[in-house]
Image 1 (cartoon, rainbow, N blue to C red):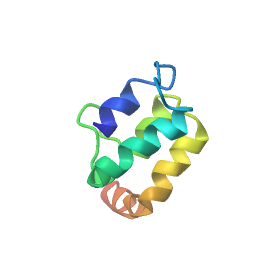
Image 2 (tube, helix red, strand yellow; image 1 turned 60 degrees about the horizontal axis):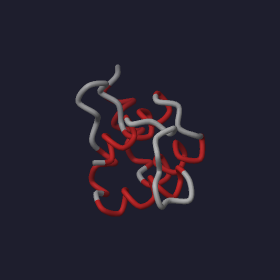
Image 3 (cartoon, one colour; image 1 turned 180 degrees about the horizontal axis):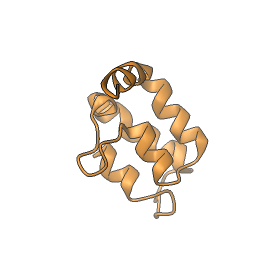
Image 4 (tube, rainbow, N blue to C red; image 1 turned 90 degrees about the horizontal axis):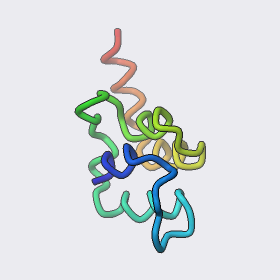
Length: 79
């Protein structure tokens, strides 16, 4: 769900949510494990996918802050 919401982009209709941070902030607690899963199409973690799809830096850093441990495995796997 998290990856799909991020790929839908920040310009989508956010409905009842006050903004993009509030929107993503309601999805993360429903599936916290998804923060450590790479997107199948782009092979990116959620914080990277959010940056790629032009979400605000608040969303990008919020996703990274929610699971900063994805940085270490990513750097270890790229060498």
